Amino acid sequence: MAALTSALTRADAFIVVTPEYNHSYPASLKAAIDWHFTQWAAKPVAFVSYGGTAGGRHAVLHLENVLTELHAVTIRDGLSFPNYFTACQDGRPLDPQAPVYARTVLDQLAWWAVALRSARDAVPYPG
Ligand SMILES: Cc1cc2nc3c(=O)[nH]c(=O)nc-3n(C[C@H](O)[C@H](O)[C@H](O)COP(=O)(O)O)c2cc1C
Image (cartoon, protein in one colour):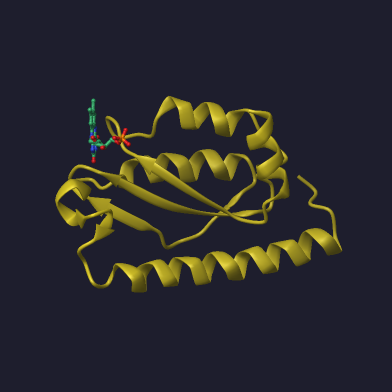
């Protein structure tokens, strides 16, 4: 866990990748999130999810609630891969639009990373 703590402390932004199990995300991910507090505060989080027909969207809804409680800023757009086992080939999505969606998410995440880094540098987060 020490290596993860160090990486989260140094990071200005996060992408959380999650599967979906019974309409939520895995307990191992919850443990990794709960082990930390200040590491999330006033930093942006994007989500990439995958699973069966739901594509991990229920898991992401739960994660948005949890990370908001930890003062993270969850960004609106994300990537979702329903039935990823038929939607990918050789580890790549078959949907030709997937790289376009990914670019949108990364652009939003980068914007928030710069904005929130500047804000944290200017004034310590009061949370
Ligand atoms: C017990 C169980 C429950 C699952 N529940 C869901 C679900 O609620 N929604 C969904 O989209 N996929 C569901 N799936 C499909 C998983 O998301 C899929 O198997 C995925 O590969 C799991 O990620 P992993 O292989 O990285 O652990 C479930 C799979 C299992 C075995």
